[in-house]
Length: 472
Image (cartoon, rainbow, N blue to C red; front, side, top):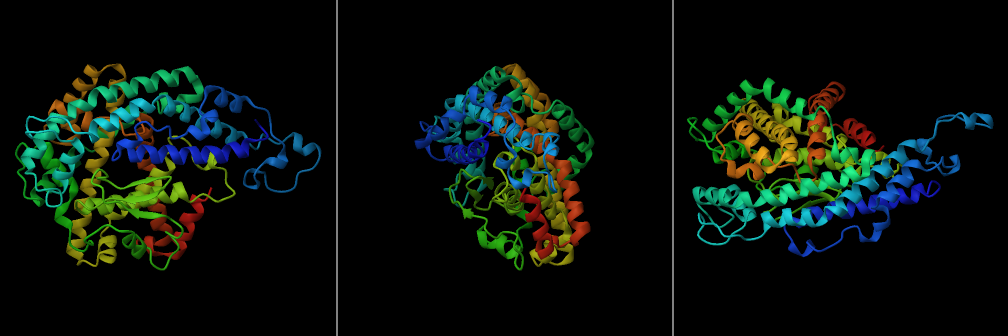
């Protein structure tokens, strides 16, 4: 096993890509419900494989990738004193085998959770069977989605959301059960971050006043009442439809390429525009960068975030092992995504990328900074609630009743707990990684500005620096 570690690394990269693509397609295509995304690499998705790799012996130096070797020449006895050069690769491969094992054991539960949002169910408010996905599309883009009135779509969403709770609870219960059988090897899935809940609570506490101001200003901007706003009003604020000037009519690969014109920032990156309404937010995965139809300015801003994530995911040097470059629940892609996302909070970006006047640029930067904060607070809410979901469905719902109005800034019915408070599709560990990435992203954004000025996104040297950082 030790001497074949590089071959295993290549197989794990292919398995991770297949798994990620399967998860993404579940949202829109029921034909994947019965698929086994990693059937070809089943021998690696086992407890035995994870434990064997983790405890295997030192591989010969000759089989070690050059990027992992110490610098300089080593002779004779010096080799004996060298720490295992494959220790990081070995640990990464074992973690990926454990991650794939957990995902395999969760396959049915993951498919059931996706089906609960994708398939049609009866809704008294809507008057006939419909899907949560379709109602979200109607709420986000009424003109393009059949013109369902906002109150009717919102009521249908409240009808349908409770059907997510049982599949969600089953998936998380199964995740913990499987991870516990793997012990330390699956700690990244079972105990992602001992301080995650405290970090989430700290974010909520220090931004309470700022969030109230952002919500109030956002409500006025979109012409909504500031007295007892609803969760639908909060969605309207977070779409940021009032800062549409200067954005293109559609979100397409050309827009990102135009932003980075004159640089090699997006060179070699596969960017695809998806029209299916289920993808209400852009998503970066191992298959490429997928862009969703715009629902407001925030869609374009989130595309910047997805670009940063995709650059890290896809920017691996061909000589760098996958398991060293990419870890399960790795915060590094999200940190780079946050650095790109920070651009939307700077007037310079709006003035130079969108070509709007100074006053408009400053207003847009402030508006989108507020939306960014509201999004972060929902992430913190999900992280806070994950420990409650581990206890029981009732504990999760009761904690949602207490925390959601504070975190989201509006009154929220309990019926939406599984919709607004559930862990993301990759589980609580991934949400914890995104939370860890927030401060790292802020630091990286400051470093980029210090090194390459406020318009670093179109600086060839900045592009070279970013791509180099993503290569290993």
